[in-house]
Image 1: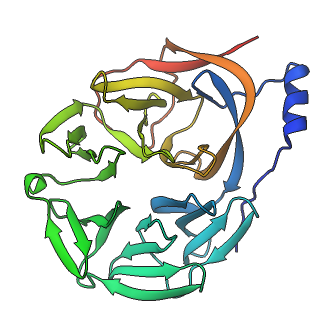
Image 2: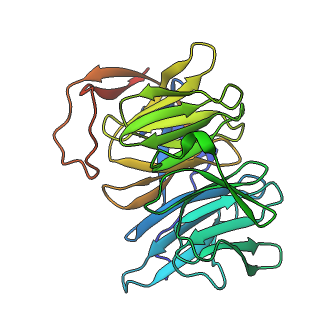
Length: 306
């Protein structure tokens, strides 16, 4: 059964809390405070989060307290959870422009049509699909294998320049650049030049917003970064105040949904119009849930602005 819940905070209540001086600033993004609301708790998530930004539906997998697998659709507007028929365990998920959902796991890729509530076989049944994105076609990686592949018209094609990389995570931005994590480094594969460059020697969790801008979460210092094509590097846009933000997506309102690997809670971030800024401070003492080699040990702190 679904044990979590979405706590809807009306805008009026949020504004009243600011007037009374009780600013909630669980996350600071672009100088504004966001409060956390619980979507799901007491269950462990695995694999990707995927979002249908047309109907604002979140797709994910979790294991319940009886160790039973569930692949589900969560309607963020109607606050409603629905199981995907024919799919229990899954790991990779992606949504196309027609709202079809592609779900990958140990037996290839299945296609789910939410309008008909129907799941059908799609392809690559001899592969264990590790990660997927959809950009005009399916891009995917295979568990414990090097390379990145595309799948279209029942044909799988390897991207030649990436065959030597074992890719843990990847996104495709609005310039068709592919950012990917391999061996604890962040790389950029430029869509036009086909060049591959190291963006950072640190490891990040990757996501795109509703406009396909690339964002990057530093799991240990809890910073949120965006890639600027103009200056050709990452720049800081926000920070999470606590926890271990591990995977995330943007919804149809361009608000963040993220899974905290530390307390195993899936959160929705809602703006409350408080102002904030980020400063660097000493690392807080806590046991990181995800061991990641990194070059920097500075820690980000959020300060509210009256």
